[in-house]
Length: 218
Image (cartoon, rainbow, N blue to C red; front, side, top):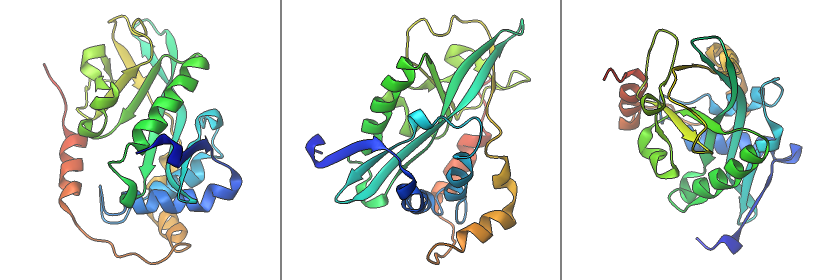
């Protein structure tokens, strides 16, 4: 893709519904029948952990073709020391523009801004196949885990500086911004604001289940 063909810019209020529809199109039936990512970004913008400075979209062919958002999170070591980090996601690309480098462009652009803001670590929960090419590594390699020494296969860490993490054990505490997404009725009501789409099963849902429920033990 020629970089001159697209514009990377901050999301504006005028983009909100288009970006939400973008998330819906990108994630529909991917990890479960239907999706809740469009509701997630809708509620995220008003949450205290949302980082508006890292809310970016790519405009291509006169429409929002890709978007990325970030939230604040923390790592805590065994002595109780707290390290601010950012959680990336969701990263959305319209299906017809996937595999064209839009997601890569958004990540590279926002990683630089996050580093300028003083952050040195980015974490997200997702399919490793989609992120290792962007420099993400298994949480196990950085000794980052959930409480209880749980190292999920889908917990991925990107360091923006080589010395960001020093090998000590860090417990990851994500934002609770996504908690309202557990309210299936609220998600369904919000989804009614968009054109009808049929929920269904596809193999990616089993792939997501395997990644999200697998842990690394050695």
